[in-house]
Amino acid sequence: MTPLGFNKPLYVLPFDHRGSFQKKMFGWDGDLSAEQTNEIAAAKRVIYDAFKDAIEAGVPKDKAGILVDEQFGSAILREATAEGAMTACSAEKSGQDEFDFEYGDDFAQHIEHLRPTFCKVLVRYNPEGDQDLNRRQAARLEKLSNYLQGEKSPSRFMFELLVPPEKPQLDRVRGSKRAFDVQLRPSLMVQAIEELQAAGVEPDVWKIEGLDSRQDCERVVAAARADGRDQVGCIVLGRGEDDRKVQLWLATAAAVPGFIGFAVGRTSFWDPLVNWRANRISRPAAVKEISRRYQGFVQVFESTQKAVHA
Image (cartoon, rainbow, N blue to C red; front, side, top):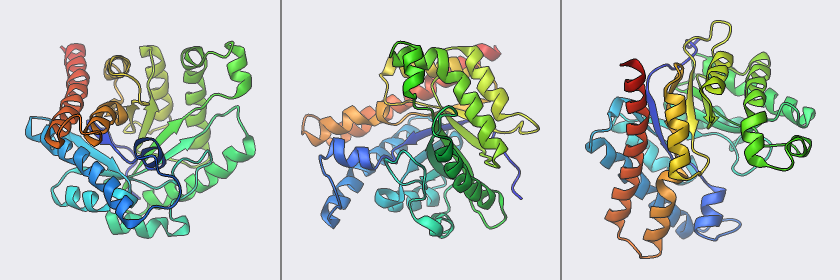
């Protein structure tokens, strides 16, 4: 049994986006040709080159990691592993409201083949939502959790928790998603973590939607670390928000013990990639801009932590 938790700094550049990447950036629906697949893989290579540039510029290699999918990023995963970088690979089907495995019952073979540092799942789970849906998801996730805690697994467990609002919840805040985020989502996140733990789902790292208050960050860490799970870490995800909002979330979380880092993807790479594909900037310029943004988020997180511990 692998000891539960991961409590070292973890600064992730995620680019495991698949459905959204394919449709929103490239405008392609349905099955892809080999040529289209290679074109998306080439765009992801720009992001990986930016990650390497950031390490050359001073981001600590032992704290930095990438998150990429097997479909478009298997070569990048192998290369990053060979170069000693921390890696994470997604295990969920892309763009589904209900969690299921990308490769069905063969999920373990894929994990053992690529051997990422983390196996990551994205799960939409609202405790006040469809209870049958929640039970089905929890059963699949327990299966994965048991495997990842076992001796055969080469990887740890990273769990990206999204709590989408239910209509009655939005009605309680007059339809305001912003009010839902501030007033309702933090408690729902805590409840979701507790329900999933009770169902036997035991992540090493919880990847959490940004929170505006230190108190809410503390509540999430308390839930993640309850009942002897004191080495479990939390990281903040960016949700594709603007730079200012992401920096606020990072600074809030960095001040709270138990938040060990972040995973900010689209805010780091989306605009530079779009501009490169439209021939508005060169490939080297796109690499440098993504690298700059990622380095900036590392700086925000680390400078906040230093100020808190000073």
